[in-house]
Length: 383
Image (cartoon, rainbow, N blue to C red):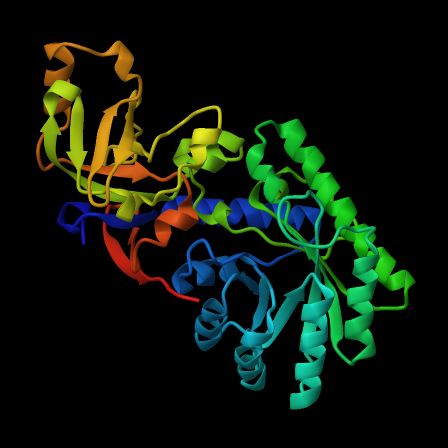
C-alpha cells in the first residue's frame, strides 16, 4: 500500500532508517565488546525485534509481563523484566518460567526479595533475580554503596534464589545535550553498576551480569570495562527528544504519524490536521529542552522537514499546524500561505516528541520501504 492510500492518522516506520539505527547501535556494542539486549517497550513489535536479533542482539528487555508473554509466544525466550517485581505478579512470572521462558526478574527492596524467595519455595521454582542499581538518582534502584544492596542480595542468596546480576538505567541522560556530559554520565553509569557487582562478589555472592543502558549513554560510552551487556530502546526509532539530546539527526527519526489537512483557520495562520493528541500523544518532552517542537515536527511525504512550522496545539482528534514563530507572522500574506502551502486533503508526516508514547497510540505500524510501499506490522498493547 502506498502512503496516499493509507487512512489517517497512521503510524509509519521508515524501514531504511530503522535498519540504519539498528546497525549503528549494534556496531557500537560490538566495538565495545559487550552483548546488547534491546528494550522492546518502544515498539512492542515482533517484526522490529526480529530485525534487532538478526543484527546481533542477545535477548530482550521488557517493561510489562504482557510484553514478556507476547514475545515468548513469538519465540523469544531470553527476557529481562526490568520493572521491580511485586508479589501479585509472581503467578504470571511462574507460568512463563514453567513454559520454558528464561525470564529474569528485578528487585530493588527487601520486601520484594523476600516475597520472591517465599513464592519460589512454595512452588518449587528457582527464580533468577537481578538487583536494580541507582547510578544517577533518576528513578528507582539501590545506590552502589547502600547497605540495602547487600541486604537484598543476602535475602535472595540465602533462600535459594539465583542472583543473576545487577542492572541500571541512566534515565537522566535525557536531560543532557552535550557529548561531554553524555560521556561523563555513561562513565558514571558504568562505574556505579560495576561497583555494585564488586560489592556482591566481595560478599561471596555471584553476580554474572552487569547490565547498563539508556540510548544516549549507550551511544556515548567510550569504554565499558566490567559491563557484560547494554540495554537501550528508543534508538531503534529515535524521536525529537533524542534529537535535542544530540544523539540523532532529524533524518534518523524512523517513526512518524501520517496526517491529513482537514481545514484551516486562516486568520490565525492555522492548518487543521486529523492527528490530535490521541495520535501524537500528550508527551511534550521537548518543551523542557532548548528547542520546543510543540506536538511534533511536520514533514513532506518524502520525510523532508518543513522548517519554520510546528504542530503547535492538539485536541483529542485535531492537530494545529502553524508557524513555529507566530509572533513574527501576520496579515493576509501569511494566511494565504498557510492555505496554499497546506491545501485541504494534503498529507504530511509528523515526527514525534517521544517515540514510545506516540507508538502506543496505535495498534499497528505501516512499515514503509524506500519505494514508498508499506506493509502492516502489529504491535502489542496492555500490561
